[in-house]
Image (tube, rainbow, N blue to C red; front, side, top):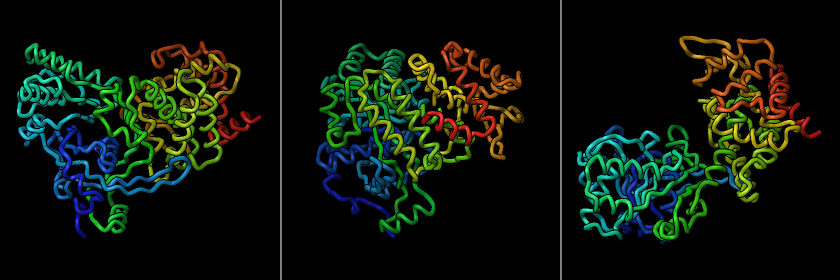
Length: 495
C-alpha cells in the first residue's frame, strides 16, 4: 500500500499556492484546527496560501511530512446538531516542515518572502515566556526570540516597509495571549538594544491578536483503527488524526485583519471580532464548568468515560438541568440567549461523542483550582438570584467534597475510594482536604469549614444564602449512595 501523497489530493491547484503562513508547532491542535480552516479555504479558492511549519526541537521524527508531501487525513467523528458526523478530509495545507535547530537559515528565508502574511503558534503555555537572550542565535532558544528574529529579518529585507508587517496569532491557552506575546517581544527588543526605528515598525506595522481555540483533537490515529481506516482509504497515512466536528477559532481583530485572514469566509467556526470575551466566557462557563461540576458525581456513580455518563438517563437529566436551568441564567446578560442555548446544545453533543475516550479521572486533575476558577463565580451569581431553589451547582460541589475524601496516603500521594476501588487524587490541595475531613465526623461542620476556607476559594462561601445548607443536605445523600443521590436530586427538582 502506497503512502498518502499529493496525488491523492482532491485539488492539485493547491500545490501552486504561495507560502503565506508560518506555523510554530507540529502538535495535533494546529493540524486539527487552524490548518483545517486554511485547507478548507484553499479548496474553495479563498485564502490561496500554504503553510510552512516550524519544529522547534530536534526530538521526534518528521520524515512522514516529506514522504507524504505534507498531506494528512483528518478523520472527523462525533455529533453535530444531534446527528452523527463522519468525514475523512485530506488536508494539504502544509508545504514543508522545517526544524529550527538544523534549518534556521531556511526559516529566515521564509521571513523574507513578500507572500508571508501570518504567523500562528501553539508552543504550549510555557512557550510564551520571557527569556533574556540574543535573537541572533542560530537559532534563538525561545519562541518569542525566534519570532523577534523573524520580524527583524523582515524589517531589514523590506527596508521598514509598513505594508510588510505580519499578523501574529498565538493559540496557546493563555488569557490575552496576543497581548502577552507582544509585550515579551518588546522586552526582548529592548534587551537586544534594537534600534528605535525597528521598534516603531514592530509595533505599528505588525498586529498581535488575542485568540481562543476550541476543538478536541485527541491525537494521531494508531493501532487497529489506523489499519482499518487505511484499508478503507487505500493508502498508508502516518499523520492521520482524529478530530471532533465542533470547531472554534475566535480571533480579536478589525476589518483589516478579516481581509487578510480570509479563511474566515468559508467556515462559521472562525470568528474575527473586536472582542472575544464572550467566547472565553462561554467556553469557561458552559464547557469547562459543567465538566468540573460533574466530575465527582460521575466518578462516584461508576462512570469511567464522559460518553458513558451521557448515556445514563439520570446523569443526562442532571447535566442538562445544570447547564440550561442554572449556568445559562448565570452568565453575562449581554450575551444573547439564543447564542448561549446553541453553545450549550453543542456541548451536549460534544460530551456525547462516542469516538472520544475522555476519562473523568483525567478531568479531576487540579480539581480544587478548577472549582475556584470555573465554578465559584457561577455559584455566587446563582445564589444571589435564587437562594431558595435546590441547586445543581450545590449538588456538584457536594460531589466534589465526597470525591476529595482521602482514604489513604502513601509517600505524599493521596487516594480516595469508591465503588470498591482506590483512585488517585491529583490535586495540590488534597492534603488540606484530608485535614478538613479528618477534623470532624460531623457533615455540617465539615461543609462549613470547607466553605469558609478562603485560601481555597479566595472568598467565604458560607456568606451565600442557602448554599451551605444545600451542600450539607446533598453531601449526606451522597455519602449513602452517589447514584441514589443523583436520582433523588432529579426527582426533587421535577416535583
